Image (cartoon, one colour):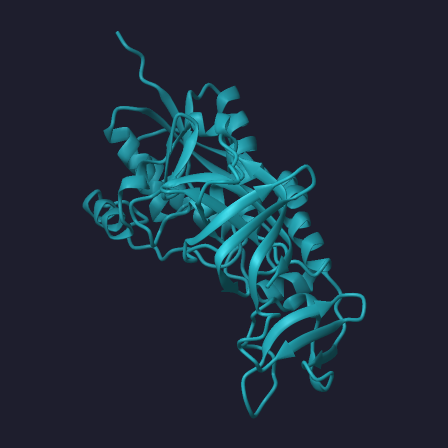
Amino acid sequence: MTTKKRVFVGMSGGVDSSTTAALLKQQGYDVTGVYMKNWAEDLPGFYCPWQDDYEDAMRVAVQLDIPFKMYDFQKEYRSKVVDYMLDAYKQGLTPNPDIMCNQEIKFKLFLDAALEDGADLIATGHYAHTKDGRLYQARDSQKDQSYFLYRVDSAPLERTLFPLGDTTKDEVRQTAKKLDLATANKPDSQGICFIGDVPIEEFLAQFIDTEPGNIIDENAAVVGQHNGALFYTIGQRHGLGIGGGLPYYVTGKDMAKNEVYVTSDISSDDLWSRELTLVSTHWIVDSPIAAEAYQARIRHRGELLECKVVTDANETVVVLADSVRAAAAGQSVVIYRGNECLGGGIISKTKP
């Protein structure tokens, strides 16, 4: 008699992970649901929904008649994800906490804990594909989450199932409604990963002291005041509080001087980049070859841009076929070879 493979499903209390657990049970796996308690702190004026999410996940587990447990990763999430994000913003960078959460929490801590508890595999509600330790884009290009997964190692991917990789969001909703899952009509979560619907500015303000400073245009004229340079990112147009005339776009900032720089010239070289220098590169299996053509994505749902990737002993440079607007230090650039996600790195500097 063949023993069913034990799969621990990360259940966040949302419709995607709920449907993931349901589909895997239908496929004959021995499924256990796991809620990761990563953040449980209310912030002034903002409610952390972890208890609601936990109870929603538990309701679905009861409906599916599967075991359910909770892993408490609050300490690790604070040190590996939140502190990383805060440190990056203090340096004037534009980090992505979801990417770090996948690298450090979901596909490291969760995987290790699940295997220690007797799991053969883990699964999540990400829209992506994995095969033989490689990562591929999902069928639904609008929901594809391979961008957020580029820092996951090949070994964890070999132990991971992504049942939603061949589905669309509408199909997931329909499946959840057909199965009458408790989360079938639950809205998608917004805001910071696991923390809730908190605007990033409000979250940062709770942990980092900021001072107002000058907003300076390309002619060195002071055109406004900001409430903290760390709140602004390259290409930003809204929220500058500069009235009248042409719109302004953020072109840079000096954290030491607490100054934000802007231009009203949308074609300014300070807004457009063709060469992106990467640090902290991570390649899942294959690293790019200089002579070959690849595609790059500089933000989730961003356009795939034709590029070359040149690596020497000191740095990796992505050379784009066409310039891209608003590439900012701290953002991740993810490299694709057709449908396969090879990996990527974090922008340290840009050139027109």
